[in-house]
Image (cartoon, rainbow, N blue to C red; front, side, top):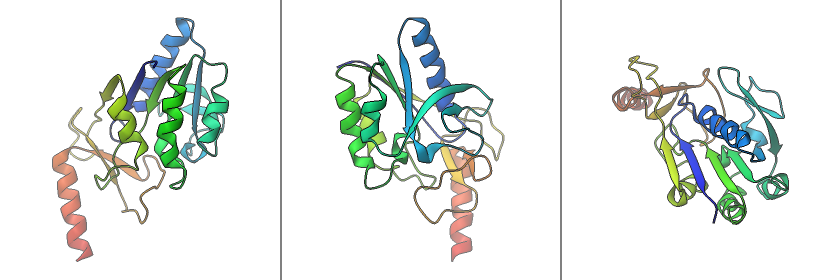
Amino acid sequence: MKTMRVWTGPVHAQKSKRALAAARRSVRLGHDVVLVRPIESVRDHECPGFLTTKDGEQWPSIDVESPELIHTAAEGATMVWVDEPSLFSEEEEPQVFGIIQKLRRTKRILISGLCATSELEIFRESMMRLVAVADRVYWLRADCDHCKTLGTATRSWHICGKTEQVDVGGVDQYQALCPSCWSTAMEERMTVKQ
């Protein structure tokens, strides 16, 4: 098995940016790196075919509709970066773990994505399974968007309250909160619902 590194944490924690930095270093060392991601993960500020971080850094991406296409997209590469693997459809997402593990036999793997929903539920299954078998896991923190404390946010918060587990969005829909601010926001939301 080749090495696998995972970057995870709440929204705004620079998961993609950190994985992108690792991809650039790998290219400098002679690796052929391909980025594959679910087409559902293309955000409003991005063009199809390019992952764009919030501060404008870009990396070419192969945006696929199903996890089976990860294998095809990875042909010829020595390293595969999968961004937001949990965003494949609910029916297809359970296949992601097996597909990545099979790729790992011959290719180094980079993974970036969320592990938990804004309600602190496991964000589908594949990401947690990938974290469990990774060689390195980077648990990243963001700055709390509510109390403005640097590096304390460990949780994502959906500003309006979502109706489905998956609601892809950016700064218009999500904030990064520290545990204290998240708990307060959750209590307020529960009070309003009652």
